[in-house]
Image 1 (tube, rainbow, N blue to C red):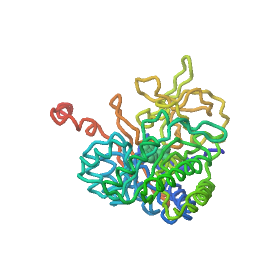
Image 2 (tube, helix red, strand yellow):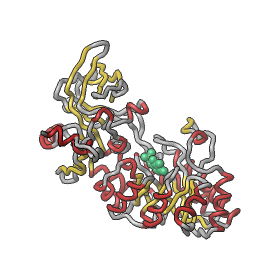
Image 3 (cartoon, helix red, strand yellow):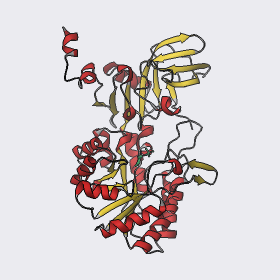
Image 4 (cartoon, protein in one colour):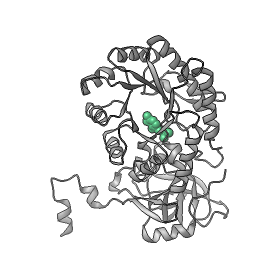
Length: 423
Ligand SMILES: *Cc1c(COP(=O)(O)O)cnc(C)c1O
């Protein structure tokens, strides 16, 4: 499928006059339409709820938009809990799916009344020591090990993942939790990441629903919800077919009716914890071409770098690039599109065929709405960019300002670096 920017060149030029590049731009309309579609796709399940994976796009303005669609928040750290709380989420609006969790974070999550999702059997005792009791509602994270396969492909390798409990452990965990007073149970599993197929969720659902029936039968635990977690991907490449969330929802429904309903478990709520699927396509990194370099390769230097978007440097991830205003031009130039870090992996694209790029051209780097800004860092003393929201009415709101040198130096509260440079 052709990938088109969600904003025109004219609009972007207008935005750039007020907010200098680089910045991440989010598309409110796209976010809303997609969130509504997800809700519809699972409307057959009375208790359905999406707990947005805050780590994907931790910005209160984005979280507030998702709140309009009934979303809760999936948190994995103290600051994510704090941000969700400050944005108006409370109690069971929050799923705390953490791992290797500090006691302080369990205490904070418990004080908020968040649903705690235990990553490991040893965390039962650890949680009890941390908060003084076992909550009545509790969830356990499952990892069956081995490879996760679909008909045509190996999807991921849970056997190599640090998360979750083995089959034996989850049965044991349920028994212990029940003996310690837990009354409502959940099951959670995240077995494959960024899947671009409608098969993943239904297959995962089958594994978890069968487990749920056995768990109820053998431990007598009341299973209240099954959390399919994240993993529904998006087509980063133009040749990929996007997932159809309606087909996915129907696929899960079919398995639900085959396995849970006959077992008398037709009241189990389905939860999701999608991050990428909710936001990735509705954000872009906008950057300006500032240099060209002709040596052993052809380089275009842009004013963004890997600190603004780490995925290409970290996983060699593909992000599509549109050169604004040159959508129809032939892609007859082969470029490495690079940032300015002193790191040779600071490349947004390698050997990418693009239209001829001139200094001053605006580049729209697609699909940065999730795991984009959020993974940013400050290497080379680079500052994090602003985040802007393109609203439904066409106006633009700055939803996070760009960092300044003062922010970068703020943790040196024991010296006078800035005062001395300001003289
Ligand atoms: C990262 C994460 C998610 C979201 O994953 P996506 O790939 O963005 O859908 C959901 N749940 C947990 C526990 C996670 O760590």
